[in-house]
Length: 546
Image (tube, rainbow, N blue to C red; front, side, top):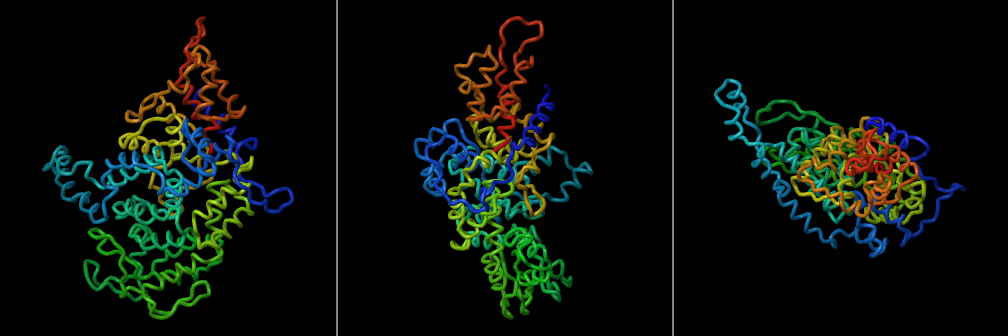
């Protein structure tokens, strides 16, 4: 069977027979089940928690959590400041741009001089001259590449796994596209300063921090939004009329807070846009920080969701809007739904959503409290929720590397970031404000699964030079003359608790000459190609899920 045929078989298992649960019911009587504590000593529960609250279990993680206790491990992950992650921080030290302020990044990675291209085309400058004057490691593209490598490095080697999962979750929620204009210079500071410190904090604080950050202001064009009769008084655009831009106002309500069905109108969008006029960026290509420009602000009265904002409110108009939106019941439900979708099922159970929303309201959007509500819920631990989610490409790449206990440094992280892009998810490159989707249909198709299998084969075959993979410990003691024995050992190590369906799909490959290393005329014992068989296990239906 070819890799394409196997991808089709995997697709059939993933899409058919209820193999992937997309919703979790509330019970036969329709009533919400009572929250219950998570099982403490159940390996299946530990594996489920590791699959949902991390980027995938490593071979020794099951034993570690068993020794610590599942509840204690979860609480520890909810307090990342108590977890030593020095090894990851040392590896990140090679990525210098992560620590730069926006002005430092703008100076260290300058825009290309347009005259350089003219000289190159006219022959006044050779390509070698250009490389010496403007080396690749000093070009703006390096900023995004280092940030991508850092995300992969933290996902693969970091000990503060739940925190990293939530940083990824919130970046996607408050998505900005690194490829848009000046955002390239802002995005590392955006994640570092606006999202990372608040990933397990209060949701209203996340909204405020992202609203004021130059990355969001530039990405959704709010830095240019002004009162209707505003005329630029100085600079190269002197005399140009500016006007209201509704991009941020619309996405703030539709994607960041209330949700598309949150009860707002087009009039509310316009009023919110008016409230944020003057929220801008100081010298975007030199300083790049938030500034409020009173001359651009619409000082008139505004009414948002039935609440009046006073005349001459200034910058406080925007702050008042954020307060209104983050304390609205629709925001509580919207955030609860997204969290339940990420951690439980593509179509999250309504009873759980309501309980998480109630926690949001009671705690002023405390993320830790909402996560506790989820992991204490019977829906989270239900049979239907077990391996019900399909991994995103980033999750697939990271989980494969973690499952193999591969060694990764910053150079390897660059390679794996490129692999994530090849599998379908170029990091920080989602152009629409919706970010990347968190449901199966976005990732389950034949082409995507074939790309995942190709990655798996490249990984186990050592084609990523800076990612160290040693398959020996995974099959230690298995007789390589018996392909079935090698398969069982790999399934136990990489999948841990495989289903009969998964083993059946893979068992069909055991007579393949490329697995047995035998031709039809060979009479001797098989010599199992462990790398190829390991790649098939990583590409299997079971490994696609978390």
